[in-house]
Image (cartoon, helix red, strand yellow):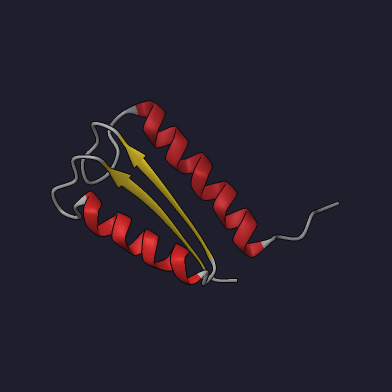
Length: 74
């Protein structure tokens, strides 16, 4: 399975949110795999707020588990 997780800062000056949203919309429209998009208000390129860092880690873990479907242990 192909997947893309986009974690975007609302005020990112390196990768403007309009570019990330265009990528998301294009992939979603084509139905080519799993794509998720999360916009973090008040954040730039990367996350600085603790709650956003935690959310990004939790989203990434859940996304990888969905895409990779790891085998259960024990």
